[in-house]
Amino acid sequence: MGVLSNSDVDEQLFQRPEPSRNALTRLFLQPWLWCILLVATAVRFYGSTSSSIWCDEGSSLMLSNYSLSGIWFHAAHDVHPPLYFMLLHGWMGVFGDSLASIRALSVLPGIATVFLGMWLVRLVATQRAALLAGILLALLPTAVRYSQEVRMYSLLGMWLIGATIALVYWVKKPDKTRYLAVYAALMTAAFYTHYFAAFCVMAHWLYLLLLSTRHSAAGNVIKRPTWWLANTGIVILFLPWLPGLVDLLQHMHELKAGGDVGWEPPVDARSLPAMVWQLLTQDEGDTLPWPVFWLAPLALFASVIWIAVRDASPYKFHALIAIYTLLPILAIYALSFISPMFIERYVSFAALGLPLLVAIAVDRLLVHKRVIAIAVLVLFMGVESVGLRSNFSSDADHFDQLVEHVNQQFLPGDRIIVSDLFWYFSYVYYNKTPAQPMLYTPPTPDGVSGRPTAYGFGTLVNEDGAKIYVDHLADLPATSGRIWLISSSGQPDDFAPIPSGWHKTQDLTIDDTQVRLYLSCGAADCGADLLTKQTTGQQN
Image (cartoon, rainbow, N blue to C red; front, top):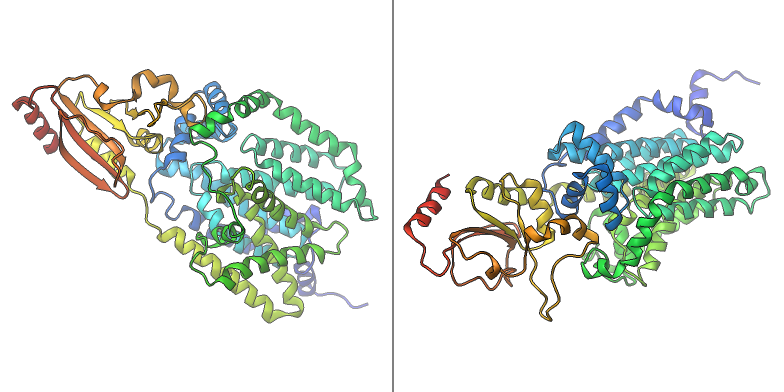
């Protein structure tokens, strides 16, 4: 038997899965790891503050400004669990609420997820596959997008990839219960972050059921009491939140009436390939030739299934990643025929598995079909580059500029009215005036109240409803003064009809929103004193 040189040893390590005890240590020692994390950091921070806070982000900020007990209460009336908002509350207490700060709370888990993805692939495949997985995951457009949003989706992906790593460690060493303790903690955190963590649990159970069909020691892990105990622990830890979840489900009709749920478009046969294109290119692919639109996503799904079926290893970890990726996407798509919820951000955690699987496939193909492997890698990275360009070149929203105009022109006694909740939360974040913005809540044409209920977004404003709700502009006190109206631009006018005694003196449109300044003079004409006040405001 010949003696292996150091280069031979390195090459063998490069071409086989890493033993669990060595994977993390050796990964940290790789220079390319830090280069990839630097790329992931750059693309996630780049442009993260270029676009204004939008409605969902504004609601995150308003909810996070409550005390921890207040967050618990109001999140129980909202459509998401409380953990992310509690973390954001603490984060803002330490680092402030600047745009760079609050979005960094999503950027950092996004970067961590790239590292976790490489760690997971290094456990189940080669070092080369881990390298490729890191590159592809760092550049995944949907991961970059939701690493730049003040919402919980980036954090959810980090918890679930971490839980999947813990599961891999435990399956390899089922006597090591500490791995299950980590798994239970991460999965509990995921459930307190977003309810769709349930689809990841389903994927893990399905994987273990698949493993149980194999005649090996690994096939019995699903029968181990510690596995059932760990899952029982997850349920027990989630029990404190259960009353809030049950109450929320009982008021689902109010959430639908307020538009907090049920607004998603219905799905059809095109929705599934369109989602794949959305995840990879940030565009639903409507302008693509129909063979490309249909065949490319089908080929990607077929490749994922091929990787799972061809996995002849004792643990079938490639199948685990395939199930983690496909089951949530397909299950949410199927359920959307009953109640639409097939939205990119809801499946972004599952999409994290796509670059990992492509990396594993390319790594396999490089052994015997090098040209095909390189072609697949270049093609996938090319598609990702299209998505990144779309992320970085898309028109930024400048709602902050509109609010800043009001901040600069504001005079004591001015009233500010926002046309709907979509703009209200964003306005509150940017508002620097002492006035509390009011919310326009006109009744529907059939006379039903337009005021929010105590559920969904309404929970954040309802307790101040007596002060901020304006059902009719004519209901405002008939006194002389200035009123700022903030609404969508275009027709029909969100505020029509405007009271006859109001006189418009300013009209500014930025992107798809507008602000108008009116002088209200009651039943009399505007006097010289009010006109002077208006002129002074414009000069300031």
